[in-house]
Length: 172
Ligand SMILES: Nc1ncnc2c1ncn2[C@@H]1O[C@H](COP(=O)(O)OP(=O)(O)O)[C@@H](O)[C@H]1O
Ligand SMILES: O=C(O)C1=C[C@@H](OP(=O)(O)O)[C@@H](O)[C@H](O)C1
Ligand SMILES: [Mg+2]
Image (cartoon, rainbow, N blue to C red):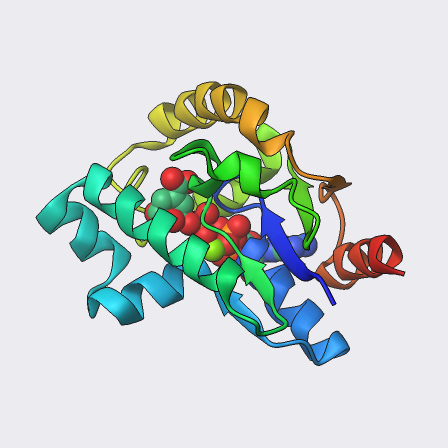
């Protein structure tokens, strides 16, 4: 069976959807950020604060490769930036994975992230206006990488269950 990879911008629901998809399919779920935190024995915030983003991207790339190389069947929820560094986007197209881009509008992302930014160092210190502008520009820059996914699911105005069902349809 192929590994299932969920990708997309911060707040699109990778971690939430991967967890729910795992419950329904009984395929184990691994969140790349959680794996990095366990390995580093530090939170994502502390890694950024103490070592900087470049160091985080190195850990992220190494951990992504490690998860892909393991023989375990799994659903992997990436971090929002994972496909955008170290040529990780090329790995989204390999034959032994099914990669799914959870595509959300700027508005959906903003509405979710505005309530939920403290654990996301890239936006934690922004005010609401700064955040909206940042998301719009950043999403535009990152879309090139996200579009390397094999499949795309729109998540706007969908419940968790509806998005999970869309992914099950892709896997069927
Ligand atoms: N329909 C939905 N699908 C996914 N997440 C949703 C939905 N509605 C609200 N949320 C909330 O949006 C946030 C998504 O965060 P998360 O799953 O951590 O995303 P990511 O891992 O992509 O950054 C969570 O707080 C989740 O509860
Ligand atoms: O978009 C990004 O560059 C990041 C997204 C985060 O993951 P989520 O997308 O799960 O929030 C986490 O990996 C880190 O804060 C950097
Ligand atoms: Mg996440």
